[in-house]
Image (cartoon, rainbow, N blue to C red; front, side):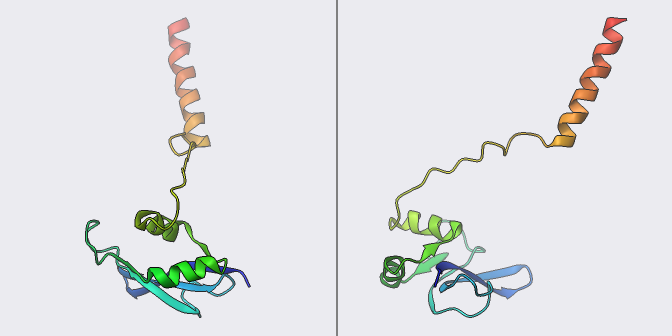
Length: 117
């Protein structure tokens, strides 16, 4: 059974509140889970200690059982000092899309055409 430590969304529209849960990866995001390990409230200030609460003993147990944390939960665990920090890179983030590249080429061609005449 492939285990995940992930977020399960709760709360009303535009007022999210998440539970940090251990679940089978085949279950739906807000569906059945095996154990609730903590909470995450993104509406609180980033320096608030109530923003992320986890039962670290149980998290360690599930990690020992082979559960894989999702990216967001892994960031919480890195901040808590449980996991080693991993380097993340998104090299293509600042690169413009295909259509923007094409528009830039057309604009450069138009600017070069009158300069040549």
